[in-house]
Amino acid sequence: MKPIYTILIAISLTISIAFTNQLLSAQQDNVVTKLFDIEFAEISELSGVAKSAQYDDAFWVHNDSGDDARIFAIDSEGKVLIPPFLNGQYHGEQAEGGKEPWPGLQVELAANIDWEDIAIDDGNIYIADMGNNGNARRDLGIYVLTEPNPRAIFRARPLQFIPVSYPDQDTYPPELWRFDSESIFVHNGVVYVLTKHRGKGVFQLASGTNLYRLKDWQTDQINVLEKIDSFDDVFFPTAADLSPNQEWLAVTGYTELWLFPKPESGDAWLSGEARRINLSLMTTGIAEALTWIDDSTLMIGNERGGVFQVSTNDIPVYDGQANWEEGMEQFRRMFPAYR
Image 1 (cartoon, rainbow, N blue to C red):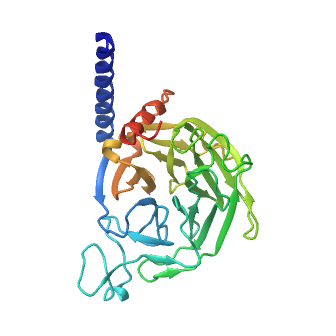
Image 2: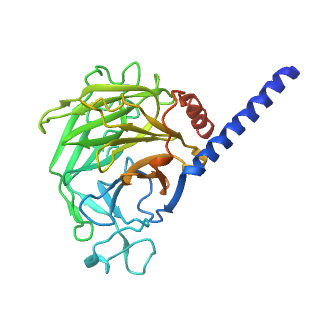
Image 3: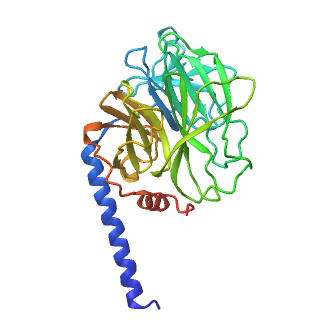
């Protein structure tokens, strides 16, 4: 039999955790608004979203690892966009007799090993095949394709595949797992990558992120990224995007949403006065996708296709109190295998 004080401590801890969860959910519910659920079965594990800069009411999304090399366009209500001349052959959310579900825009000569994020810059789409859960991949890279018209094109060929590697990784896997990325953004033609950290294995959680950049590249050789910044307080970043006015970098994870101001000089994007709100897994779920609707409004998407909206006016200045331990605890309660 356990001593009574052990039982009381356990009860107190349980109550404290439950109360913390309620506070996080209450805080989030005040600032996070549910927009819609993507109800198209082919979009089965949402992993990235980017608002089109050229085509009205269009957002590009993709699935996580193991899917075909394809992207989908949806509108601001979450409805999949199908080129009108193919409506007689394919259906969207509602099944129709004699029609197949829309397979999305096929990216020819590409493979979805582990697509984790998508970005748009200067008329091009960047798709990051940078997922690296085991920290042992040596075929990481980024596809670049001219943004197609989602209402007129059903397949596209990449302009380039950019092979990349990390400058500080020399073993596969390394001793500390710091070389998995689910977040990419592009600014003035420069590609930036944020890492997601683990300890010494896939189930060992860790905080922190490193920022790497790639200014120039070749397609016939591995391009070594350049490490330019880091931030210890972020927990498990899963998506990033720049605001349309290029003034703010938004970064989301499962349990936090961050804003970082544009640097006054250089590109140490993680070193300015940050802003942050907590997210609750109970409300937003496994958030893996992020884009800007406009300069003051963010869209967050989770793996199951739930899509939410956040106003940047509701994101306060970061108070310096890191929340990654609570984030880890939330994650462990949902996925007990992690430690």
